[in-house]
Amino acid sequence: MVEADCGGETAAAALHAFAPEAVLHLAAKGGVARALRDPGAHVRAGLASTVALYESACAAGATRLVSASSGGAVYGDPARLPAHEGLAPRPRSAYGAGKLAEEGYLSAARRRHGVEGLSLRYGNVYGPRQDGTGEAGVVAITCHRLREGARPVVYGSGEQTRDFVFVLDVVAANLAALASRRSGFVNVGTGEQTSVRRVVEILVDRGGGDGFETAAARPGEVARVSLDGGRASRWLGWRARTTIEDGLSATATWFRVSG
Image 1 (cartoon, rainbow, N blue to C red):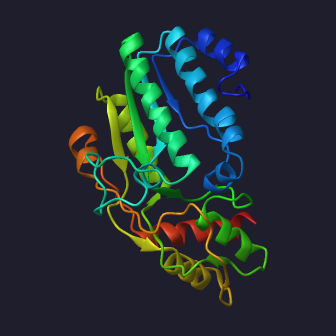
Image 2: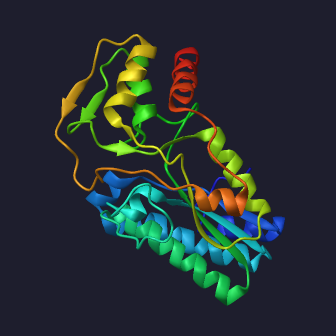
């Protein structure tokens, strides 16, 4: 294992030594809130490193690149839901704009180097082993607070919706994308909207909590998200299989027993 900035010289040397046929890029630093506070730092830490990784992977001989993008952040507040890939991107946050730019650079790498490149526009990925101490990931943060004996926090009305997709389903999508010859971008989501309030209520019930606190809405958040999975089905033979109830139960159980 090599621990390094994915866009740095150490990572480039590791890629050169390994000479991969394909590269799956999942590394990221921060989320919507962090990018909002300092967009320039986000570009340097996220976008710049990602572009450098693309170049290093191509130089190392990779012929396929699969990269994590964000469906909710790239589409912004779409005119219709579930959002499909034919809709024009309308990111509302620096984070979403950065992910859209990464997709553009991956497209440029395809044309420049002749590699196959696919951006996966994830929904809100959640599941066991997710870090609950940061700023992103309402499921993990809620589970962590419940484990610590603290009340979860719901920002705004809690009626904002997300397309929550379980981590094992995302793993299956990643593997299918690596095995595919498709290039471009594709949604990885359930096609369903679930409110943040409902997610927190389910987790409080599973975790034995006594309710939640509320706080002011956070800037830059989109109101409603769900992702059309038709292209993923056609291109990758993939669809989400885990219900929100089953996924949240598995996640809550892991946080309880891992504490």
